[in-house]
Image 1 (cartoon, rainbow, N blue to C red):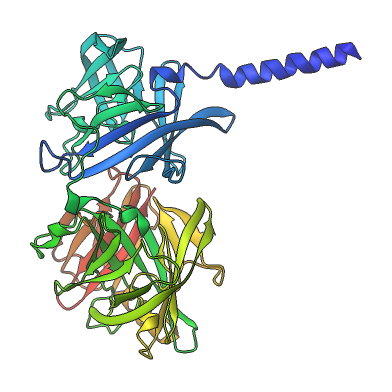
Image 2: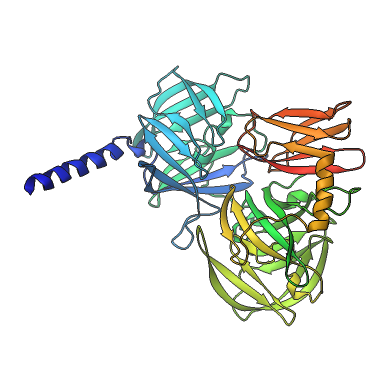
Length: 506
């Protein structure tokens, strides 16, 4: 009997050792509990336009390998607000790996590097870079001797540099590791401070602060969503039957050439409608509206006519009466409404419990859910309180970084094409232009009935990243091999119509 017990103990110890031995000391990267404050200094070189806070928390096991979790927040972490899971990291054979929430994993640093060594590294989206250690020394930071590596990119003409400090991490923050070595417009992220258990362990010598918020830009947008959030929104008939679904994406950095006032808003929504109005009009409604929430916790919306109104107050308590506005995206119109907070409650989602507010008046009610928007799906916020008798909208699904975090229990799908009549129109449009395969690994084919058209591709930030004019051809292909994994919008423009289609690059 003792032999059996002894054998069991040996097997258990060896099993645990096999998991543990795949790991180096994570403290080479950072100690558990380290919190970083990071500023986005684009376009201003000395004052951040955005603050991001990240924290390294406890370990977890994925596929028998120990990882450590990285959480992200819009402000300092607290017991009440622990932020949202952003990524996983692990250290093996002195190499630091960053794992995305979708399961992709990249090597972002090697702590065994020495001066003039070369290495192949990546950034968060998997973009590969070749670097050389162009500086290597030991620095004294608050009484601790820490190794410091300066990396220079050698496979491109771009001369950006990045540094890594033992126990502190990269100079741009772990989610933006090695970004300074890429020529990315609007991505000037810089580590400002690092704290461990409330104690300051790193201060960037170029800045005399650890956090900075211009009062008007004190961003609390996480009340309604985060950049990289997307929503599936159902359009209902008067009998509450689901007609079709639209999609909305929350994007960061609103400035665009068509709206010079858009910089007052840090976020905007890109709305993609699947409804086909007729073959002489756009197949999709690709349009914008803007939203912001600052220190006063008021949700403002600005429409395409530059009108601005308060939609909700996230400081409201049960019993409060609020004078607000409803916004209808489809008509780009505001309506004044008055309602009261019937109750506050909690909504359970796949990534935690979220506070909710039920706003009610004599016409109806709508519910706001922290981080998800409201149950009308953002395209007709507070519309149920207007008394207008028309089709209604409902939130069906919510995604963050392409991972589903909410499913309306009344529906078993996240998308639906229009009714049969409109589906026939959709089929006609499909005959006019076909884009396939979807998803794709490399090549996307565009086949049309017209020999002259323009092809454009947009990323989920709304940036045009591809453009080509096609003449005297009905067959066209696009090589997306170099595109990062993600979701894109392909827009094919003819003389009298535009076809838009979302496509997934694997």
